[in-house]
Length: 104
Length: 228
Image (tube, rainbow over all chains, first blue to last red; front, side):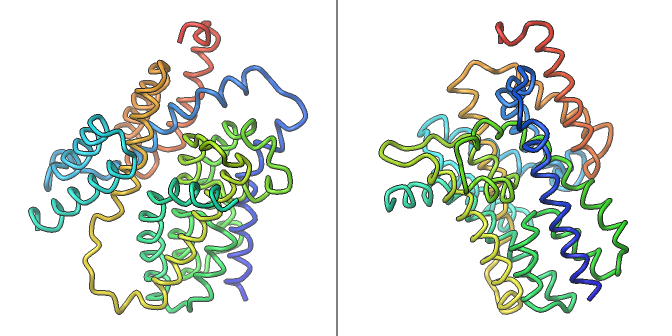
């Protein structure tokens, strides 16, 4: 029973964090909020890249070599072909080969 | 409508790869703690928040208090507040679908919606909706698969979750190549790397978001909106 309560609580609070900005800025539009809505995606996507790579150890283990190769190949593929799916699948396969075969 | 669904499916493939793998990891972990697939299903349908659900396993097994659970959920999901800010405009015309769009706004769905350009001949409203819906389906399927057949699986999927990193990189690169709003990208990288160094990998997201918002407001007040 306690588990069901906890799951419900997590569901409600998670939704609350998602709905709050819509609720607060619903009635009126503020220039600053429109500006933030416009430019935040650029900064936040950069932050999410850092978030994904946050546990890379530059100074120990493999020194993040696989991550560098992976990030490099995604960029390279995308600069050459500009095909989102190809860049993602290609980069992921190269990264997987690196972590599974080369560094074990 | 068929075309819209098909185009939304194609747009969602990168998240499919990531979500099925991460969902399976979640399902397997939950199952290994002795919870049946019904828990995985309920959590992926009603909570639907990747990192939160991993933390939820700890909360459930340790029998956390309700207050504790509320605080943890708020801390982990505080970043959602920022996602909503950039979707207020985009969701304006969603009508009856709006509550679901808000409910399903995960990091990955956010990244797809931010960069979504509705293909010609597709209904924008349904295009965005199907992207969000498909994403949640992948997450649910992944977590169910993980908790039901996870222990039987022998394929080595190590590194497959890099697909998510690759997706984010491609979006940043596309933003960089197709607009000249580079300043904001630099602010994002600069502040989050600084916060990562200062606060460490488990606690840098919230300081980063605060730092990013403050810097953007600073740029705005300096008249950066016209110059950038």
